[in-house]
Length: 131
Image 1: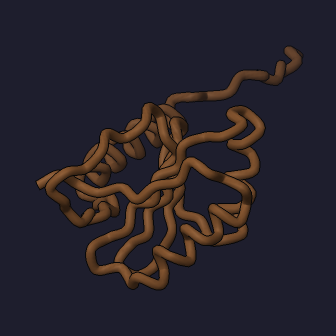
Image 2 (image 1 turned 180 degrees about the horizontal axis):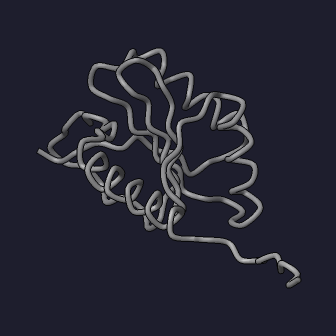
């Protein structure tokens, strides 16, 4: 009588099918996702922004977003402090721009500015749009 041998192979066809379905779903869903944008106030004469600044965006609802060369991510105040401290290790005095939405509360923008300046950063400015 012949002895049965076990197959030690994995059939990957179902996994490939699932991956292709997920790829199609993400390709269809990605354009529908809305990215949050900050509606900056405009001024007549705005100075040029420094090269590669760190950005802190204050949304209309007061939500904070930290933007650096690796991308944008939503943060709270404690995470913002940690990210700024980490940025200081690579560049001793990085340029930081605070972008406050037109409809954001003045107090929220000032709180963020105060938090950044209390950490010892001196190159801090407000980002505006030109008319």
